[in-house]
Length: 393
Image (cartoon, rainbow, N blue to C red; front, top):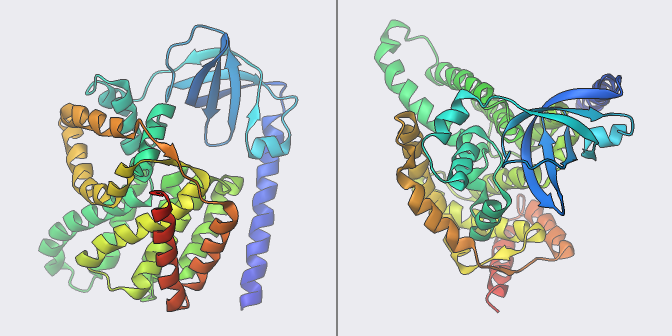
């Protein structure tokens, strides 16, 4: 059986590569191609602008010598030359000569958020929080310094919270009508309804990869639960990586994907040794901060002492998130703007503190061992505290 499953995985991967190659051939079929993309980064260099553009198929850079306004998160159409784009470029990122850049109308949801905020930084922050859009470089740096980037990048954290909220609301109404169909499985029915509503949410947010990965994991978790299988299982992580690979192919080879998968892994690791309850959920936030502090500082070095508040800010965020969502529905979403700006400014000053790649790899290996050996679990906690303490030396 295991050999058949392994063969299925290999064939599925080969099939996915072939689909990507056929899409690539279709993409370069014409020397000039018009594409509809979103601007996910923009900065000035000498006498021209560098634009980073993206859609569900490609990510690429181009330059523009016009006097452009700030186009971050704007939808545009642009014509690019495809002659020198290789298959590897198509799968990763590439530079393309372009012309005929045209701004497209913003979506209704974009306009709804924009009209509730005066500050562009805060507008982009809420667009990232609710619609999965990009954040400007300066704000990304501030969030990274404060250790809360994960809160404003749509991910499993947000989808999990939405699931909990929907399950609670639907459960309230389901209970009142269950007397008409007592034979039905309450968890299955509500769970299925939650997945349907979340799919609609993904549609309105244009299916951001981070949310789709979380949605895939949620479906896998749902299947494990209804089959009465242990959800704190490494199979869930492996299956999520596999199906994400089939959906996104090379897009899983990114720092964002790695950090999101490791975040899930460490949550599962914690609840392997601790019971699921509210008290341990608070403790888990501190544990997760320690683990991700080590991992994130392999790639990002920004640090100041306010970063130590990250676990507690994460807890407060579970209150802020639904309230801010409701405030935006009632068109009064700007209430917290000044508080957010003041908080973000705490991340303006920082120093660089990095963990070596070799040490980071050893830490990861010990983390995987800790899933089977409790001594290793204690070991990674002690190591993480030592590494965190190094930032104060």
